[in-house]
Length: 183
Length: 182
Image (cartoon, rainbow over all chains, first blue to last red; front, top):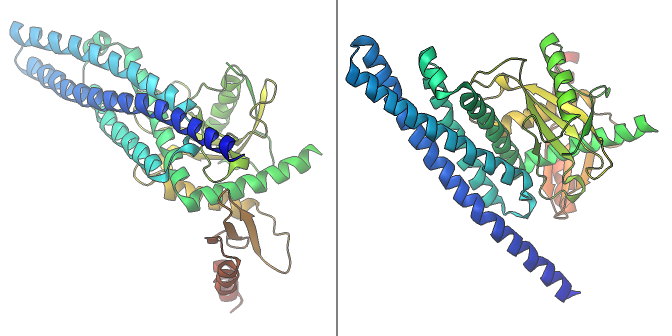
């Protein structure tokens, strides 16, 4: 029995370790990708305004270059965010220590906080720039940021003893009533 | 791809009365009927409560055609009695709130308030002698909840501590009633 228990514990630890590694890598990739996209969005907005004030070939070329770069960055950000969401959906956070859950939740908060201004800035661009960037990638980014926000919310609640106890009470109340209704 | 049968007709399901929300809920039900992992699905973790693990699912949904970057839309919590049931997996919605009302900073406080509101509106006080409901979590600790004001009294492994906390609990509902009587 103790041997079985220790084997189970070690299996869980192994599983956690193998899951934690790609999660950390993806978190880093998403954080860096978000920062890069934010900086390039600023560039696109700057050159877009400058070109509107003083139209020139040089500014048009610079704008085209940064739009193309931003498009590529946003696509790659959306891709890594999607992979991270899938990984989070598969992760059993009950195996995690409370501090680790809080760390992941805060990391997600940062991604969402820094991602939302990108979308706000993109709204300042004209229809041509929007068409060049691609409507799908912007919609996907907005969608995924909300999904990450929802995951962060769940993790914050899971790390809070009182909120989780209240949720357990609510489910207990609800499930008891559900059983009665079924009967 | 697992299909889900989302029940929105439970008598205790709490939601605001809004035509846009009704449309959104029906759209969500149709979406998760195809695949439960759509519509920003989250399997809400319940550390310390193995009984409820994988049984609370959450979805986000927005008004139709909304593509804004703001926090428009709603968040729905559902109870899934058997997540490994044959498809479509039954899920019953129990709590829904407008995301616009949620602050971007403090998720936990807002959700805790929403759950307290749900408990206040739905809980049925079954015991006459004691207004406290007790539950044991996965760590063997006792969780005591006042069924009158829906405030969490104490989480402790020591029964004496829980007894003491319940004995000294100042129920806000009682205070309100006393003021009303005066």
